[in-house]
Image (cartoon, rainbow, N blue to C red; front, side, top):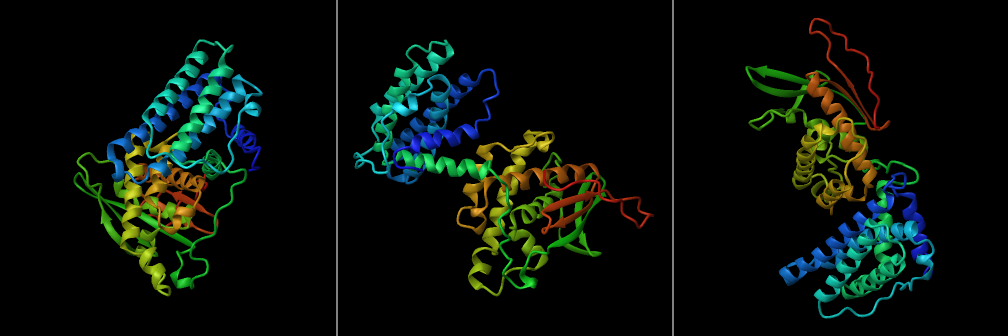
Length: 376
């Protein structure tokens, strides 16, 4: 971004990702987002004051929250007060030295100013909107200086996050093990049979590949059955769409032993535990949403939580849209496996596709042809 015009450049980028622009209540939705993000900023102050030195992530969180606030601010300003952004005094990359701690008065004044903006939008009084947004901007610069956060840096962080979720063009990142020997690569194409076996009301799933059982026999491990016995499909979805799955590496014995550092840090037990934790967290949300049936997106907060979980591992570099694709495609096949019950899944890392086919009658050795496409 240009040093002097970064705010206008940021506003132009924000306009491209405004999902509310076709709504009749466009301005009201932007104002609601603005007050929500303002609340998050003030909440970070509360946490800092409460925890003091025990809250080391304060500045990092403020960078993200201020960036999110900026997105709503520039969009609302562009919609209700055209030309205002060109008039605002825009600080560059350098900020003044931070004060000796977050100041409560400034944050409360900031929250009150945003509340006045919201009130003006709700009553359709646009006569003094320019003044109210201008005061909000002035107080935002005070708060950002107080937190030692450069507004331009916050805007750039927000732009990077937005592009990670909604890139201009989608292109998969290379597989992490492309440069490793073939025996240390995730299998590029597999056919996995998910076989459900029942003993009374007790149901378990067995995995077979090339007529050989592998992995553990899985049950739902919960009083109210929910299909989690099929959850290995999520690991295969991660392998396909992220090029990452320590769990699948362990199952298929393809750990990268030729590089001891990679073997320990990226393919070890801790990485596998993190992957299982991600699967469980997403599953908990998915149960509330009928396992994403009929949905074409995953909410941003969940994607951000997942990204926080995998920090420090190679997959942290994968953009949000790939995570979203992996989750949605994994649950597409999961729903088919639950309904089957079971079936054959073709895992194709080269084509970045998961394909499901139901099992045919047991006395017929043929499999039904694939009718499902891969990633949405």
